[in-house]
Length: 206
Image 1 (cartoon, rainbow, N blue to C red):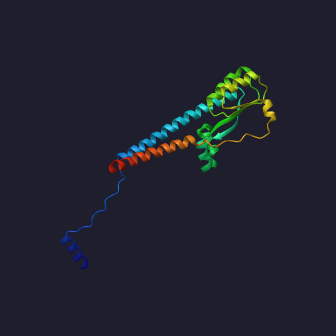
Image 2: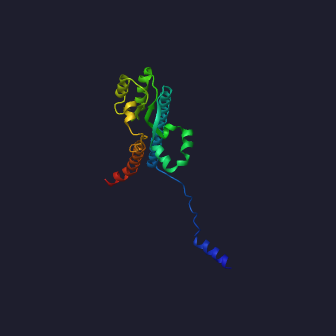
Image 3: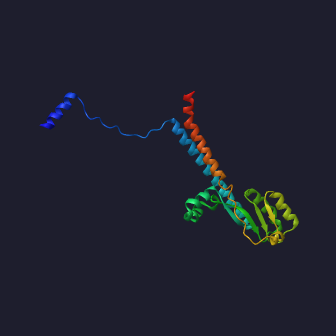
């Protein structure tokens, strides 16, 4: 009796339970521009880093073939992030992606460098752009040392005599500017995002 009366009362009043609309994910043109811009920055940065890593690996192999090997590596911005959050996966990532993504060489050592290979070594070290020091532990002429110093004006060229006067300590890494490139990309992405999202509000307030 009660159910029939309630049904009749709903039919008389004409009220029915409204159907709850389904939620759909929507985004406007502004968000589309933000997503496309961030994706373009990410893809461009990945492409540049990939080319840099391949170029670095090729130069390191070229130097190793003529007797100049890496003595010290310093982490890149990606390397710092991996070392901070995924230290147990660093070796695995180096094998899969390549070491150039995570480290760049700063100190090289040569125990025996042929005189006819000095110019080639100087050019390759200069093209790396990350060299802070070159240790020549073998005998080298003064002309060859001056050639390296002229090609690498910002690096220390230490011959065997200078190294003998130094204390026997391994050079330490410098991390001050390791993450500058990655931070610059993140800052640029943040600026673009804020500009795209805040411009309509600024335009409406005028």
